[in-house]
Image 1: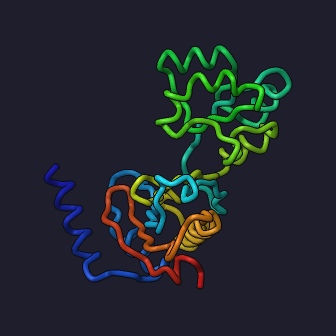
Image 2: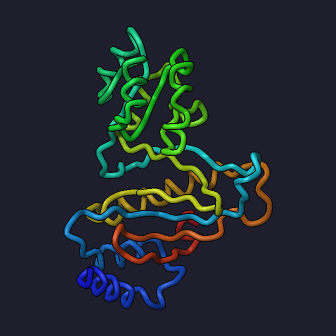
Length: 232
């Protein structure tokens, strides 16, 4: 733990006085100070002017990052017949119906994204208390309840990121790896911010985008200027 503390302390020193800088400057600083022995994830956190306790202020959606996330996403699909075959051909890791439900109810959840065809929702609905808290419940609003199984699986595998505002009005997600080229990371950041901006709910009043911060998995965060994050 002492080594981790020293590394973090050194990184924090390099970040002192760095506030509201450009996306590129923030990424350069983060990459230069990422010293973990693994390829850290670059994470984005956005503070929004919403109160998610009100239904008309909920922010939720998906974004296809232009350069992917660098993460291998395991996809499970609830489907039967031709749609099950379509899911397998598209690269789904797990495909099933009642057998998949039984596996999940037995505690086996070895996937990161769950997709279902509409006819499977009576089965999937029984798993709400298990999948819901893990943010894995298929939802038509984010394209995970669909007959277009092929596109849904390929999007999940290709770097699609889901986002949902938390109770404190914060959205966070991984948008790439430290090993990514800086320009590609910047492109991913702006694509994510744009998607969240477009998802502004009707009930949001006043300032919507309040703060955007970037960090690496093991490093401190740095706030970036809203103009730079939005590409203005």
